Length: 109
Image 1: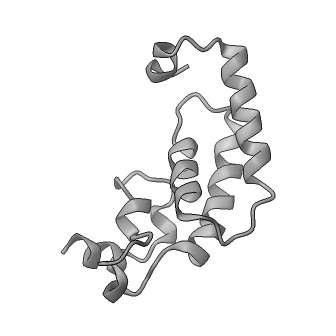
Image 2: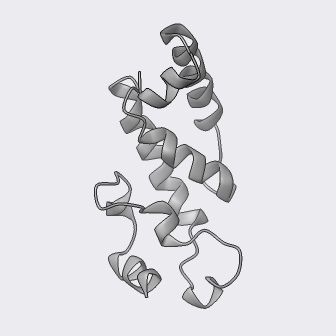
Image 3: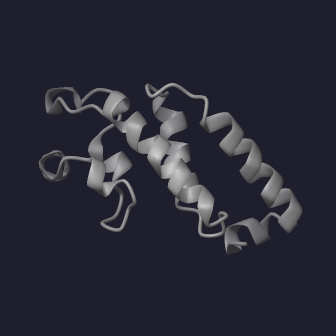
């Protein structure tokens, strides 16, 4: 269990129940997801204490959602949208392979 979850005093069984419910909610979602939901699930997919089989299942679902949800038109990045850096927050992100490196570079400028 991660330190963050210990701070809210969740037992392992409570954490497992939350994890299962999150997966159950995510998997039937369409590929075009709400920006906020997608962003939350990205952070969820990076939770160190997830069951070993679940992160890949979650990452695959999120990778499919990226194509429909991320804003690739840089002229719209001044508006409220899902920019590449919201998805790829660090180089070791499991989603980095699904985001065009040129988009990330342009978003850094």
